[in-house]
Image 1 (cartoon, rainbow, N blue to C red):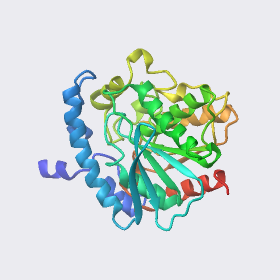
Image 2: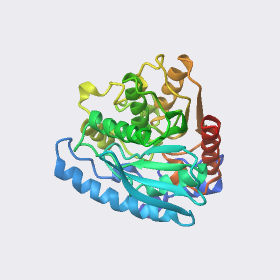
Image 3: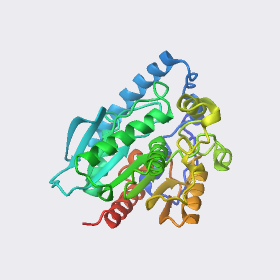
Image 4: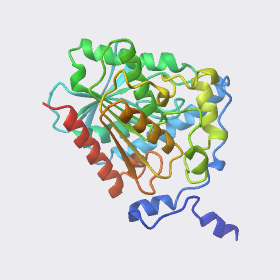
Length: 326
């Protein structure tokens, strides 16, 4: 009985997804087994968690990087550390894709998400600049978004025009990317030409319908054990509906670049994707909501060889080529 329970997948494995996705979904286990995240003020606890997550992320990146020819150069944009990732046979064209990595605002780094950045460079043919921003709770939302804005401003000072720049973020990095756009717009700095938000965490308050209805379908993390604490490390409760924390509450009528939102139907964040899409569309912003049957959070890099992931990356490439025209 126990052996049978051990072999039972935590999530429903639909026959409507690819064999590669089915095989991966069958390996996923109950997120209740993930230890609870620390309290927001427990710096030592967060540092211990971040160290473990960093090691796991580096190992995962090493797997993703196999067979992806690229070059990576550590550097700084202003005072902000970055990794400059370029695909094979890249030639200077003045175009840059700024990447803000995910990790619930509290985990990973440009180094441990290098695999994701390299896949993006390989898939799109673009130079990718991955911003190594300070993690919460060492920094809060305003400082973190300021760091990304500063990196973008340094690129502009180097001669990269905003019309030749797009921003790409996944998970919490997707929410951060949207927040950075709003902050730049509000400061009348201009905005990147396009945005790609992959499985974005757009509302840290867990207000969306699918936070409840898909609670047991998403094997990523649990709000009550994990993301609630990460959200509080990122922003005080009274600030969590600020658009620079949860961009879904933003006013898009003052402008926002063309946006591609990608995600899966098993994600508790799904309501955020839909609400963001509706808000952008209502404001007249060109936006595409690109959803995938049976897919989980960040499926593009977690199941990189699945047809669904290959298709999603192709659509991301085509979207960026459309908006970053020669």
